[in-house]
Structures are given as C-alpha cells and as structure tokens.
Image 1 (tube, helix red, strand yellow):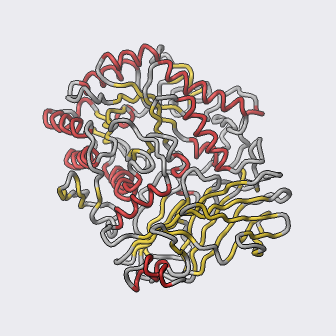
Image 2 (tube, one colour):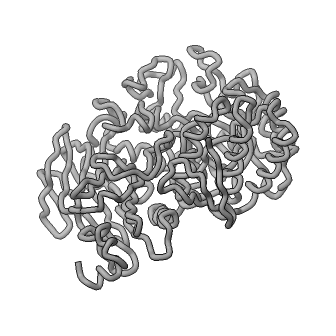
Length: 554
C-alpha cells in the first residue's frame, strides 16, 4: 500500500489492523483490492480459479471477472457449461481478537441481532461491520444483487461467499454473463460513532432507496384478533382509533391483516393460507366497500396478502416441488419463475389498488420459496436437489423478479415486505418488517423480537427503507408499563408505529398516550440512535429528538 493511501485510510495505527492490505483509496472513497483467492463451487466441490489477467480468474469454462466501478468492485460470472452453486473470495486479513462484529440477517431478525465477538465461520448476511473501540470498518455488497451473499471473518482472512444456487441446484447460466454483485467498503471518520458510520454505509449499499412520502403510522388488527377478524371488527377498531388522531395532514393507516380472503377447503378458517387472495370471504364480502369505509372513518386502508399462495386445485405444473419445510399438500406454492404465476401475483396486487387500498403488506415469500425461516439458513439457504421451472436464474434473481413485479403492479401504493430478503427489498419496497412477530400475549416476545431488531437494524431506517419493527400488541395480557415504553420508542425514533389495540385494554391513560404517540409518529423526526447497542442487544439508552432517554425493558 502506498504511503499516501495509508495516510488517507488511517488516522491511527489501530486503523491499519482493520484495513491494511485489503483496501486502497483513490480519493476519500475506500475500495476493495482484488482478492488473494477466488474459488467456485459445482456439484459440492470447490475449486480454485487461476488469475489469468489483471482482474480475471478462470478454471475450465468458469470465468470470474472483477471490475472497478467508482468506489465498487463489480463481480461478473460466466460458466456456459458448468452448473455453479457458489463463489468464494478470500482476502488476507488480520483483526484484533478483541474487536466486535455486526452482520445483517437474510430477511428478518429473530431476537439474535447484535454486536458479537469475532468467531471464525460465522455467516454475516449481506454485510459485516467491525469495531475495535477506535474505528469501524464496513464490508458489504450493494442491494439488489443477483446472488445471496455473506461475509465471514477468520483469524487470518476475510471471506465473501456468493450463493449462485437456482433453488437447490447449481444455476445453469448458459451463454449469458451474470452480474453477481458489487462489493463496497468504508471506514469511520474521526467524528462518527459506529451508528453513524453504519448509516452512511447503508446509504452506500443502497444509493436509491424508495421511501414513504410521509412518516407511516396506524393500526393493525393481528395482535388482538389473530386472524379472527371481520368487516365489522375492522370498522369498529378504525372508528375507535381514528378518534385519537390529531394530524389530518398525514392520516394513519388501518391495515387489515390475515383473515379476510376466501379460505382453502383444506384449511377452513386459516387466514394465513387462503385459497384465493383476489376474493374476500363471507366475513368481509366487499373489499372495495371495506376500503371506502376506512377512508370515511378517517384512516388510509391497508391490506395483508400472501403472494405465492396457490389454489387448492391448481395444476401441479404451476407449483414448486415438495421439499422439507414445503411439503404439506394443503399448502401448495406457486413457482415464481413461471410467467403465468407472476401475472397472477401482479393481478392481485393491482386489484388491491383498484379496490382503494393505499398500502399492501405481502408476507411469507422467502419461506414459501426456500422452505426455511432465516434462522434456519445456517448450512444452506434451502434444501438441496430441487429446481425452479427456469433453471437459468439464480434464486436471488428469481426473488428480484418477484419483488419488481409486485412493485410494478402496486403503482403508487406503499408496499411492506414481510419475510422478504432484506437486501433485495431495499430500493424496491417503501417499508420492510425487520424482525419476527412481536406479541399481544407475552411481553418477552416483543422485547426479544421488537426491541432487539429496532436497536440493531436502525441504521437501515430511511437508508434501505422505513424499518417496521412490528406492532405494539396493546392488550390486557401485556403489562402496560412495558408496552408504553415500546410505543414511545417507535413513536419518537421516526420508525413506523403500528398499534394492535384490544378495545378493553384502552383505558383513559392508554387513549391519551396513544393520542400523543400518533401525533409524534405523524411528523418527520430525527432517526433514533441506540447509544448502548455495542454492549446491549436490547438497547436501553437512546437519543430521541436530541435528548437521551432510558428505557427499562425488564
């Protein structure tokens, strides 16, 4: 490394431990050097590629070319005859064993986010941040990439893996060249906290986020109805909560969750698996009328859906094959590589807009495609051996196409991705559910899934999308003193605030506090900063609206 580069990269000797031999800078921007090793995988076997040009690595018919573009290192893959399952890049690297790392999650977090001690072999989805008490170094890939990526920090190396599976088999690229991903990196400046560095890095990874025009807040029926909803219940709840709204320039949303669509004959009463998400069941009858009633009551209508849910009698040729986690014959899943299925998804999304809904929350697509929840994706993203109808696209490309199709059909409706691949959602959807379900039944679950995920993924707020930490389950089963704090954090951090309120749990104190929180959530506010997130996976000290606030999560 040239001395002028060293001076630009490091203000202290400690910084060289984070960046030496792995990056260089032509200007104020950092850029990854070429890797020391490049590997490809096919048929379960890894083989090392030989560097045959300045930035080209080859083995047999496989060619990986690396291209410097501004402050990124682009990765391009060709493999006309060999079905590839992955790429791996290795940089010689050393970092203090006392340093901590923070990675992202494939889709939602499951109460498992936080800064952790460096451990070899740990998969850090999409990006990894390293902090040594003096500086923060960041390594990641740009959002919308065409492979599923993760970083591992080892005692003597930093590695980036790119999963190129198509379902459970290697992708068959044929003659085309795949733009696999763009690698980006940066380090903290003298004035930055790790949180501010993380936010700046998120902006580097997602240069064009698609964000709501105004702050999003409102109500959702799930955490007191749990699918046992109806048009009558939604109207009563909307009317009750609309009376607590004071900001008429930014109306709240009333989101109808699972339970509105026609049931599958195999699963009567199961709102999470409907037979046809273009038709309401007898409890709702007319969804266009339902949307109009919500508007008349003073809120904006929103709707939940499950995009890849197939009908009970769909032709088997339209379905994804049965695998572990996706093998219940009562739950057939549409193959998103079949154009007919994508047109069905688009039709449903466009229909909701015609009905008058202004926001749609689509759910379960990662699980329906892979047969796994994010916390189960330890050894692999999905089960081996199965394939999509179109074997020429990577799983990431298939997911990207699904998301962009939903986006196209939605028009100006807001979209909330739930159980969506985070890095592929950014720049496409206005909001993303960043954690697993909170609860209207037990505070411990809300603390684990809500507080943890908002505390650790807040750097993504308004840099990737608006981060939805899920609802305040305001019921008589959850202590009010805890729910009150959770509501305050969401209302004052600028993150979306959704409340699931059991009418019997809304006493005078609760109503007044909801009214105050609605008023705050309706306004643009500074992004809340967790002050103790380096040491506490349930951050209790926050900077909210330029003041420090302490919470007691119990």
